[in-house]
Image 1 (spheres, rainbow, N blue to C red):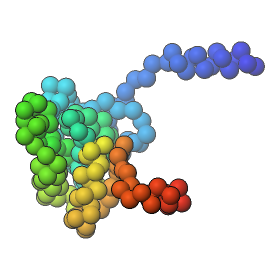
Image 2: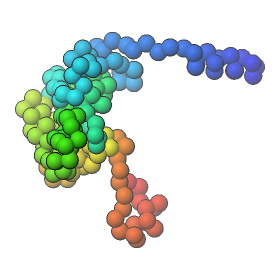
Image 3: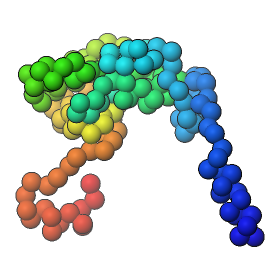
Length: 173
């Protein structure tokens, strides 16, 4: 019995995964490759994949690029959701350009991406990764009804008041 378990677990490790083709209505729990519009040659460029009235704004993290969000974008687009991934100002260009920009520029870029997606989508969820999720939180806090939902990935949240560390285990975030 234990030999069978070892054999089956080693078989799982050697099995290769083949990405599936993206089709409308495809379950989101399957592994997908990005659509042809999102290939490595345009890795630093923002992308927009129009589909239905529901939309997702994708915000990459610090020093990231829209390419970091390509798999999420391709899967959502395959499910009939409009997707826009922005390149935050100063990112994916040069160290000097990055140094010349601050969080207020990045937030302005996120707001612009939201406004552009709003032109084709009536309901919008903002998906942010790391620093992008902090920008997503700020968008939701300041723009209220323009953001219909949030999906926060690897968010760096920390309580600023020392007394919060005593309460944090009792207060779910």
